[in-house]
Image (cartoon, rainbow, N blue to C red; front, side, top):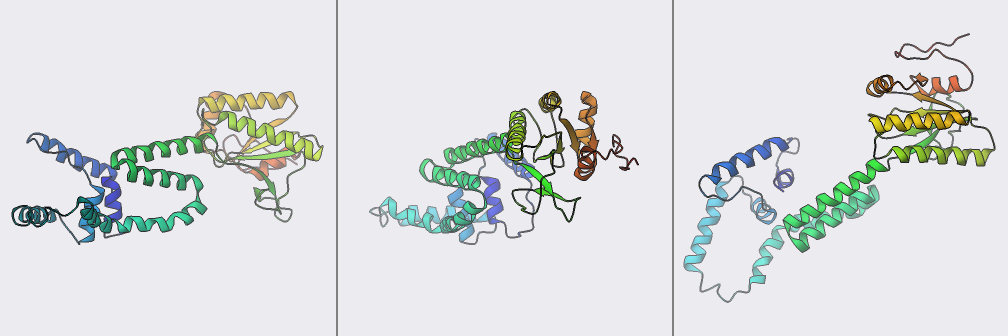
Length: 306
């Protein structure tokens, strides 16, 4: 809550707040206060918003607030005795009007990302109904579920090349001019390959192979994996790659890796996974089409063997 309110109320938009510094400050303040029976330091959503709304610039506003409360208790207690508690909530609601104005951003957020919109709504209504602590806890929990879902089911695409630009490969669904290469599946996996999404990687590739075979009635002889977005691979990912390579080899289909990052290439070498690797999808497809190229094990320049 402290970090969130600091981001919302800072006057300099370009100032970058450090989460570590905020936690360190809260820890020191709470630790020192603990020796004097003080309350732990934390941020209040309503009070911080109210202080920002009235133009508070420093912690001195707390002294002024205490002074006003003291005067009210000593002088105005009888006058406010019959005032309903609900009427006092108007002050807080007025101060929180800027937060409620964020509801206007909901349609744009829904259009941009439905999952982010779900996280926002669940956190918003949980805070309203259950309070700050439970509401933020539910929001964090929903965010973790969404994070695990995105890791487990990342984006993947079958890419094709443009007839006029044979070195350019794009998603065939998004670009109608991109055409699939006959006899070759170029598969792009847009995430790190790990234990959470290894079966998704394998099943998605198998479904693409089946769909391509049924739709074109042509034999697939090569699968080119575009690993440009595969930033990392763990032991489970290496095992699934080996398994996929073995399954494809049974059907006389060769697995080819392209655009491997340094960490991915090193992991493949350490694991002992022997697979043709090329610097670009264009070179990998040329190799698969029968124009044998020099295998770029050490990222040397690709040369055509005449």
